[in-house]
Structures are given as structure tokens and as C-alpha cells.
Image (cartoon, rainbow, N blue to C red; front, side, top):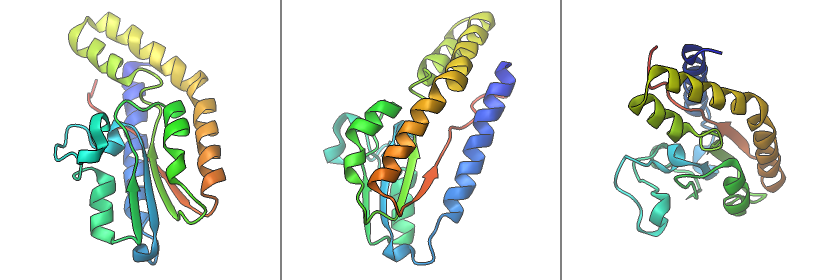
Length: 177
């Protein structure tokens, strides 16, 4: 898979997920019990306005979960998303926020499992050949290892919140190659 195909796939996931989130407003959003799980894309790293209790997780009131909650007034809202989270740290440290009464869950996970930040750093600071090699490693991990980790995470979400509508979001496309 080429660098272009990798980023196009990531972009397609992000656009599709954003569209789903926009449509994921239950008929009675005000009655939703919403929990946001995931990594920096869910916590809002880089957006500023971090909540005091979030510490190094850097949960921002300008992140999409907080903005959705403000616009849709769910019955309850909890964000446990944390910068740097992997599929295993979401599973071990964030699923406790879910319950049988949870009706809406959003999640981003997997980027840190395949070294998303390292790929970005490598591609910005090193040669194109080094970038392509690092992207190919990430693609291999995304194709061979990540699906099992995501399946396990999604099973854990379903076990704790069996009636919830789960919205899985992807990652943006940063470069057009």
C-alpha cells in the first residue's frame, strides 16, 4: 500500500465517521446517556480550554464530544478520553464509565497502537524514503494487528453498554501526496 493510499483510507474513515456522528443524534438526544472514549482526537488535544480534572489527558471543552453534548443536551455526558490512549488503555482504563444505561458512545482508538505520532514526526522531519518505510510499517500493523485489538475493544464496549449506539470515528488526512 502506498503512502497516498494509506492517507486516503484514513481520510475516508474520518469523513465517514464524522458524517455518522452528525447523524447519530437519537430522536431524543436530550434523553441520551453519552460517554466519550478514546485518544487525543476524542480528548481534544490542541484545542485548548482543558478541563481541570483531566490532567495529562487534556480533555478540552472544545473537543467534539463536549461540543456535541452542548448542542444536543443529553441527559448525561461523560468524557474519559485521554491523550496517548491505545486500544488496551481505553479497554483497561475507560470502559468503567460505561453502564447498561449508556445509550450513546463515541470512540477513537488505534492511532497510537500503530504509531501515528511517530509516523507524522518521521514524515515531517526525515527523508521521503524513511517516511514511506515508516508508513508501510504502520500500514502493516493496521492491517495485521489492529483489527484484533479493535474487535476486543468493541466487544468490551458492547459488554458494558449493550444498548448503546456506538459511533467509531477515524483520523483526518494531513497530507495529499
